[in-house]
Length: 217
Image 1 (spheres, rainbow, N blue to C red):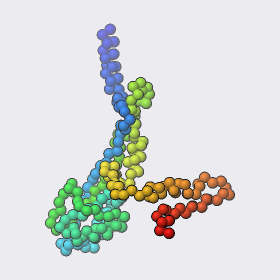
Image 2: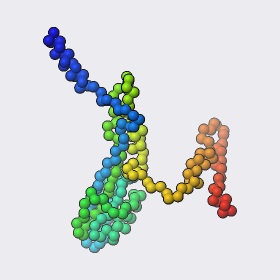
Image 3: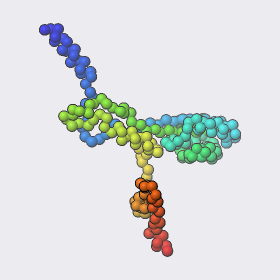
Image 4: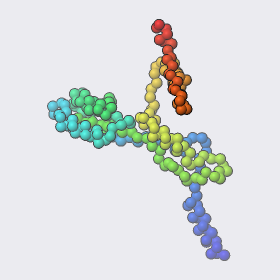
């Protein structure tokens, strides 16, 4: 009888180790996007106050190696930043990027006579997804499934053009433009049909005059 009790206790302990993570309550997503930030620093000596041809080529190669893309912000710091800023901006423009004002504090201060170029890279992801710890059924407590929110938030993190928008968003205009707001509806109503049978022609796009143009005429 004692042996049976010991085996039962061991079995219960092992079962507790494999117990699924309890599911949360409510409609909030269990997993949400997380934005990570990384600084890449490039220092160049500029005794003349500007980048020479060699340093400019090296900076271009550095940008190319980083693979500049949406979510990257370029800063210029140092004693000669106002002079060499236009050179850095010209090189960054080849990648469709602009130089931002200021510098991130995390990049540190440049030494005298050194031009520092900082690329701050933000990336969004949803850690812990997929999460299959909790079984989808049975769910007698009607609690939120552990994987709830993974698909939607992972797609949001992958598709957002600038991950920083998940933190702050973009400021809206001071005045609302009703014509711009209705543009999508106008295009939806007047755009040519796409589901066509053989022999049919596309419906021509209607020309819609705005209220402003009518008033001018």
